[in-house]
Length: 187
Image 1 (cartoon, rainbow, N blue to C red):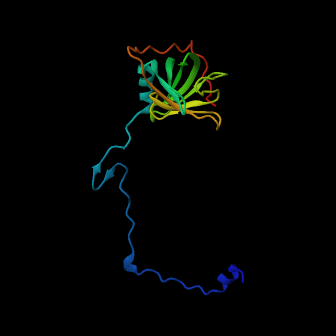
Image 2 (cartoon, helix red, strand yellow; image 1 turned 120 degrees about the vertical axis):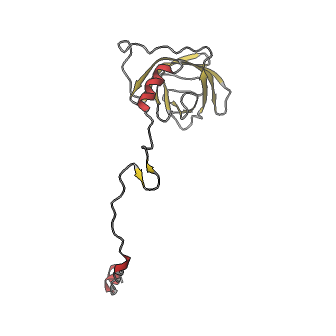
C-alpha cells in the first residue's frame, strides 16, 4: 500500500490545547543598545576600515625584503618595492615591482584594511623562477608579512613568502592621481 494511502487511512487525533494558565504574555523587546542587566552600551564595532585604509596608504613602508621558499625547494631572496599605494574604500590598491632572485616583475595587489587580507598578482607573461608562473598569486591574512603562493595549476607546488619592512625604510608619498595608470581588474 502506498505511503500516502496509509497516512490517509490513519485516524487523526487532535492534540489538546494547552491549559490557559500556561499562556506567556508578549512583552515588547528592549530597544537596541540597552539591556536590563548591562544598562546602555555602545555598538560592538567602532572600527573604521576606511579611515585605516587611508592611514595605511600614506604610512605603509614602500620597501620590503625577505624570502620566498617554494614547497620542496630552496629559499630565494625577495625585494618588493611599492611605487604607489591608493586607498579605495576599505581596500588599499598596491602597485610596484618584485624581484625574486635576480628577476624583476611588476606586481599589483589589494590589501583589505579591515582583515589584513592581501592578494598580490605577478604581472608577467613568463615567470619561471622558483616555481612562480603567470596566473598565480600570493594570498595572505597577515598583510605583506606572510603569504602563500597559489599556483594557477594543480601541479604547481606553491610556496611561502615572508617579508619585513626594509631597514632605513622611509615612507614615500603616493604618486599624484594624474600620473597613475588605470586600475586593472584582478581576474
